[in-house]
Image 1 (cartoon, rainbow, N blue to C red):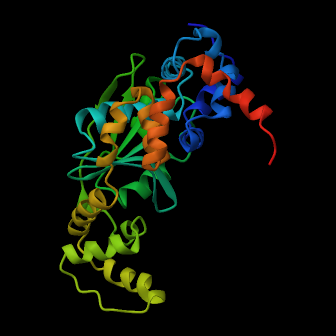
Image 2 (image 1 turned 120 degrees about the horizontal axis):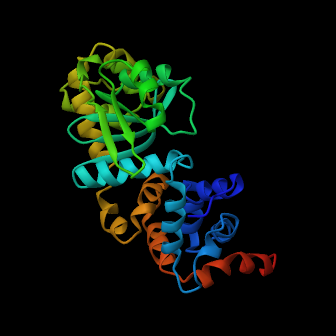
Image 3 (image 1 turned 90 degrees about the vertical axis):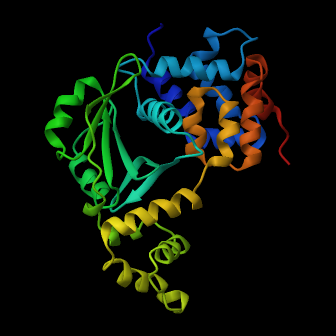
Length: 305
C-alpha cells in the first residue's frame, strides 16, 4: 500500500467528517468530496469505472493502517463491531459527542445501560484522560477507553479499575484488555440531567412517578435541578436510558445504513442527516468516479446568481 504523506492523511480524515457528509447529503454531490479524493491520492489509485463507494472503502483502508489511524477509524470500529455488530439500531441507540460535565464522550451506546467510549488513537495525547473519565463516570453507568496497542499499558495504569479498556489491533479487531464494570449507583443525577433536554427530563420523572408541578418556563430548569439532585442514581439512570432510547432512536436509519459501505456508516450516524439527505448519500456512493471528479469542475464554472 502506498505511503501516505501528512497532507494526504489530512485529506483522508476530512473525507469522513460529518461536515463533508452533510454537504454530500444536501444535493447528492459535493465539490469538496471531489477535491479531497484528488488531494488524498485516492482518485489516482482507482479507475473511472469505480464508484464513490469504492473510493470511500479505499480511503478507509489507507486510514486504518497502524500509525495513520485517527479518531474516525476507532469510531468506525465501535460502530461496526459493537453498535451494529453485537447490537443493532433496533435494540440500541448510538450517540456521538454527548456532553458529560466539561467533556464530550466520543460515542455512547444505549441498550440495557449506557456505555460511554473515549477514543485515544495513536494520534491523541492522554493528558486529559483522567478528567474526561471522571466526567463520564458521573453520567454513564459503564465507561470504556478504546486505544492503540502502543498506548494500552499506559492507559491501563491511568484509568480506574471499573473502566474498561479495549485495544484496536493492527487487524482492525477490538480486543478486551479489561471489562467495564456497570455501576449505575455511581452516577450523579444532577450531572446526568445536563445531558437531557427538558422534555426528556420530564419523561424521566414521569417514569419514576415523581410529580413535577407546573412552573413558568423560566423556572423549569432550576426546578428540575432541585428534583434531580435528590433522586436515586440507579433509578434515574435506568429511566434516562429508557427515555433516550426512544427520543433519540435511530431505528429509521437501519435500512439506509444497509445500502451504504460499512466504512461510511459511522460518519452518516454522526452527521445526523435528515431522510432526504440520507437518500442523497445512498445515490451518491453508487456514482462512477468519473462523474464524482467532475463535481469540482461543475462548481467552478457555475454562474454567480
